[in-house]
Length: 204
Image (cartoon, rainbow, N blue to C red):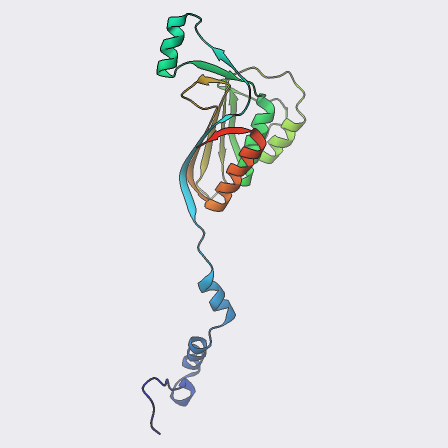
């Protein structure tokens, strides 16, 4: 029998069962194989830095003389104090971290002092959020908050958040650094959540 050049001889004519299955898969790909080939790879963003200010009233701080005010304005070192509450803002930032799969709270400090308003303090971010919701102590005083959090064991990713009530005009209220990688989709969800909950004025 004469064969045309483009015709592939079925393996069951001359080959083994293994060759037969390979021929069937090549000529009629399975649904599973098609799905694996068409599924797009997830894109990761690495070593991120996000900075923003709140859309809240603020008070100018610092010197009162005209000369000092002018110099601070020129050098962008004038001080402002933003009118946001610490506890609700900390809570929103922690919730934002859970949206990008952070689970463990390494430290939470106010003016470099550990902030533990509840006796059963835990390093689980979700339990910390629950405790903050029921916090009824005195309103904490302070101007700088630092949060450090980690992803579950096995995922090398760490977040450091600095929150400042008083800062210079060339600085931002919130500075978030994420060392490691997170999926791009989760990153956008994180940004949208912060924008919605905190009244963000600038998001870089």
